[in-house]
Structures are given as structure tokens and as C-alpha cells.
Length: 274
Image (tube, rainbow, N blue to C red):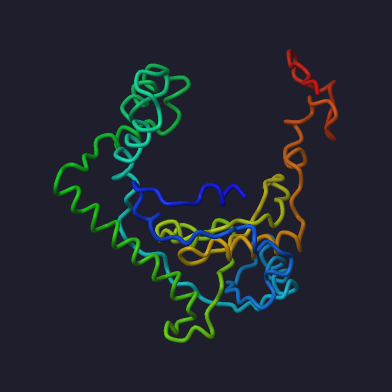
């Protein structure tokens, strides 16, 4: 529902000029995976095999594939960071307010408040501030790297989704399912392609109770398809637990919570009232 409201065309964002307007809730049905073809990888990581089995039980056909290596193209985030953050802060917040208007103001704030600010990648922020995209050589290199990285990343995912036969849509995949943290997720980010993470389980032992997921990756403007498939998979597995279970210590001072143990609250803690 939120995505339905957010989607639209932004004159300042060329990437938003072509997306189809759709109702993302229309395909959210428990049988949305029936007849779908999902590419999967060979992995025994965490709950991934069980989620592959859940896909099949929900009516999808899964086929194990080998995914190409991530493209070895220069990164661009450090180059565009200052330009884009300055544009956002300068347009989002009123000038002269308490909020920073630029990356340089954030750096200055961190320097003035070292206890709070200097532990958050200040060195990287300073390096990003030094990049000047108005320099012709820097701008030309950035433009070339941006295009090369996007094209190479799209090719990796498209090759999987079209099953190596771009002229034959009969054997195409609707999406790729990978364990969360898989390199393909970063490839999708560089490609500008959507990725949707679904709860798959929780860590044990030294991993604590940290949530573990699986991620569906698709091609451009396949958000509706990913949301439908993710919804069906989530409804079929029902593995998500309340945040109070994953980190009970944060809830022990909340009266009414499952883990309320007021006698173990830290000295000075004020019990939250309903």
C-alpha cells in the first residue's frame, strides 16, 4: 500500500519517467507462486534449502543455476556521494534551520561533537567531500564507470533470468532466489533492479537470534511480481517472530510484554506505561 502511494514520476529523476503505474496489492494472493519459474543456487546456508522447498510446495518450479561473477567495475558511490547528498539536504530542509544543508556541515558537526560524531566513518565523509564532480576529468570518468557498471550488472542478472536464451521467453525465470547477503544483491543494486527480502529464520548459537532472510531478485520494473511471490512465500512459511523474541532484553522493562521482568531492569529505568 505504501509503494502504491510512493510510485510516480519525478521530473528530477530520469529513472522514474518510464515505470508503469500499477496496483502492487493486486497480486498479493497465497497462490501467487503457482506456475512461476524461480532460479535458485546451490547453497546449504542457514534456512535457504528449506525456503527452496517451500517455493516448490507453493507451486513454483525451481531450477538450480550458476550465476556469473559480479562485474569488476570501479565503484561510484564515493564519487557521487557529496553531489547527491548536498542536493538532497539542500532541497529537503529549509536553509538556516538546525538540520545540516550539506555534507560539509555534517563533517563540521562531527568535528565539533567528537564523542557522538567521529565514530561514524568520518574519514570516509572527508574523502567524499574532496571529490569534485564539476571537474571535467572526474565527471567523465564517473559517467563512464556509472554506465559500465550498470550495463555489466544488468547483464549478469538478465543472463540468469532469460536462462541464457534471450530470444526464447518460454524458459525464462520470474525471479532468482538467493540467501540474504549473496553477492547478487549488490549486483542488483548496481543494476538498478529490484530485490525483495523475505523472513526465512533466525540464527542459533553464536549468531544469537538474528533474523535471516532470503532475497528475490528480478529485472527492471518487476516489483509487482516480486511482491506477489514474496507474499505467497511468507504466507506459506510464517517464520517471522515478534521483535521482542529476537531481542528480549529490549522488552524486559515494558509491562505487558512477554518478556517483562521488571526486577531485572537497569537502575534508573522508568517502566513504560500503556
